Length: 206
Image (cartoon, rainbow, N blue to C red; front, side):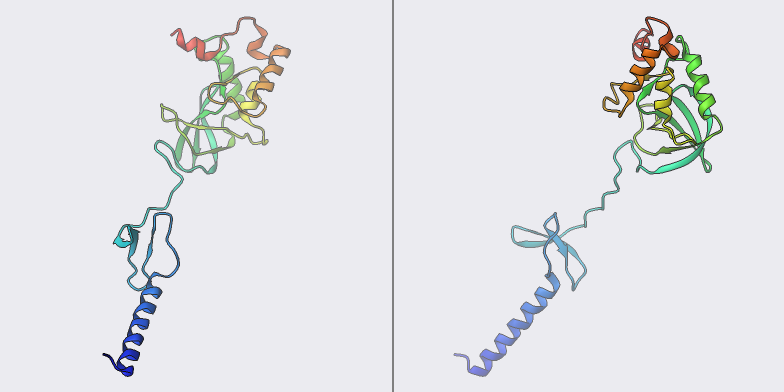
């Protein structure tokens, strides 16, 4: 049998041990069922009631395969490939941009040269805004482009009849369907002639 003194001593040791353990493990656990021990600084997970060392999860960067983190940039337009593809210069870095939400006639297609000329008049050597983000299979950044006057370039091309609303990839583009319908009613640009062929249909024949 232990005497009162021994019992008090043992109880005190147990209390101190529990307190030290609690101070190292306080708080809860994260989404992975783990946390960092305050005494050792080691991250571990509790699996089936036991603590197992583990490497902390890497914080999400917001990036995914084939994409870069989205951020607005100001750049100078230094090249016009066609009505919906441009090259811009941001600092010393060049980016090729495929305009989101529209599809313009190809260069070998009727009205293709007119679409490129319209894009050149609106954008060439101008400062524009675009966003880094998703890329297409050709490595081009897919983005809207904001012109110096604050207008959306894609919307402007639709309204003037120099582009089609690219429904397949932008079915919910705000106002784009209405802008195309308005251009058709006014017979603007490519809609001046009957039987205009959509660029995606024209490409299938090539």
